[in-house]
Length: 262
Length: 320
Ligand SMILES: Cc1cc2nc3c(=O)[nH]c(=O)nc-3n(C[C@H](O)[C@H](O)[C@H](O)COP(=O)(O)OP(=O)(O)OC[C@H]3O[C@@H](n4cnc5c(N)ncnc54)[C@H](O)[C@@H]3O)c2cc1C
Ligand SMILES: Cc1cc2nc3c(=O)[nH]c(=O)nc-3n(C[C@H](O)[C@H](O)[C@H](O)COP(=O)(O)OP(=O)(O)OC[C@H]3O[C@@H](n4cnc5c(N)ncnc54)[C@H](O)[C@@H]3O)c2cc1C
Image 1 (spheres, chains in turn cyan, red):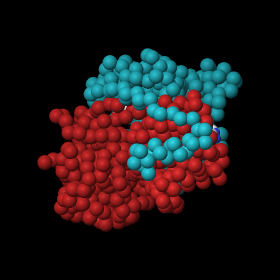
Image 2 (image 1 turned 30 degrees about the horizontal axis):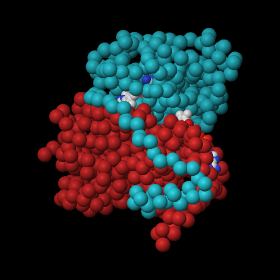
Image 3 (image 1 turned 135 degrees about the horizontal axis):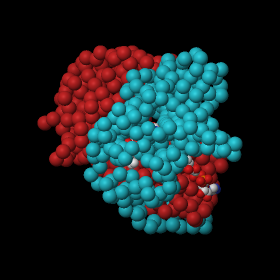
Image 4 (image 1 turned 90 degrees about the vertical axis):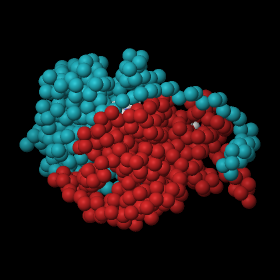
């Protein structure tokens, strides 16, 4: 038996940098360093653990849709231990929204061949948390999403989903789309050996024509949503800061009372 | 006036507050028609009518509880086909976003998630989003199909607006995909008796500075003096001091209360992402350089073990 896992990983602007929008109201990628979305490291980690815990022959492919630099995200995932990588890159992808992104990812996943797709719970830039569900809908396979624990055995994926009202145990047959949360277990650091090995691993590059997608279906033109404006939130006016010299609690209570919270 | 579908988040017939907020927002863009699914769906009607629902479409079936997400998508799609609404509004819970996304794809529409405000525009509803850890505010809209928009809790004040609320049974045929993901067990969360974190008017949070599970009692005591919900930073959650369901931030809950009090929390970007839109922000931290102080309306530089109990005592004294 063999198991083909495709892990979707996004290349995003560093959240600790000064993120902003370009003139066309897409994310400005020039001013801030990019990296592998930290929440996708958890997806790579779970794919590797599924692979390590399996008696089957498992292949872990990492897939990204993004600009030239997105290769950095793939390299990081390869150095963690993924086997190979696919980079979908095309100038016409600039400005693609969630519906379009899911189309490109789904076509690439089908072309790559898969038994299991593993995604992060959300990207750290768009933070929509919808792409895994969209992939399941497009691929016509079960969604087993937002798992804080996941196992794969005998063609079945099982996991725990911790929701607001309840914690649920889920189960579905492969093929399936899984997404994992940051409660699923710390992601490993790439070892020196892993980093060296990653340099030799294959990275395939595909463009829209490789996926039979027309330019009009994606990008700003194909988008189902429009951003009409983006404004930086005004800086908060400097608040009152007091040093506790025994009266800090009392002073704070007075402030809260003055604001009618007490 | 055009109809607007509102997906109802309820527990056995008890409607959760974010849905009532959605009904208020829905009235700005059309006539709200509510869709309530699963056990107790019919029991939601009175509350929904009181808050502006002209119609309540209901459907009860075991599938909603026994399988993940897809049965609800099937039902909402049936409602869209029955009503031809001008927009579909869904609460921005993790599940709500998944339902909304799959629905949008099926009906050939765009989706906007995590709106914090909604208004009528010349080309359909305009959503306000708060992005990049709430450092930017954007205005966006859906340009193709029926706008599907998810809205964050605390985005509007709940207003009563009595309407007919006529109950109609929705007819739903489940798709082949509906039974794809089985829910094999469910453990409901125990209620703490405190307000729901995302819905609370006041949130009191503790971080690594609280230094131990047992010390969270002082955070809880402060919360109880104010009738507040308790939140925690990821550092506190990862250390096992407080449940993950109480985590505030990018990968936890995003809260937008009238008052947020952070104790022993440094204010990392991922934490700020979940609380920066709070109306009034207060912090207690012994490090005057902690980034959280850049956000505060009022900050106390001091040891939380001194300040928090003194604050609680003073509040309780004032309440008499
Ligand atoms: C601030 C902001 C707000 C936005 N709001 C909207 C909106 O309301 N509606 C809309 O349609 N679009 C929106 N977009 C665009 C949207 O974020 C992108 O199209 C995006 O690729 C998909 O959504 P996400 O990044 O939020 O991913 P999520 O749904 O949060 O991502 C979940 C997982 O999907 C996978 N994934 C997502 N994108 C990729 C990728 N490019 N390559 C590989 N794997 C991927 C990853 O595993 C990720 O962890 C927004 C973008 C930004 C920056
Ligand atoms: C992808 C990703 C997602 C994340 N999501 C989240 C999230 O959802 N929520 C979240 O919170 N974090 C999140 N984080 C983690 C975040 O980056 C920080 O690590 C975390 O918020 C730090 O928690 P803290 O402020 O409690 O701890 P610290 O940063 O260690 O700060 C503790 C603070 O307590 C103060 N202190 C210590 N003792 C006392 C005392 N006795 N009295 C007063 N003050 C005291 C210290 O001065 C310090 O400022 C995420 C990180 C990543 C990478």
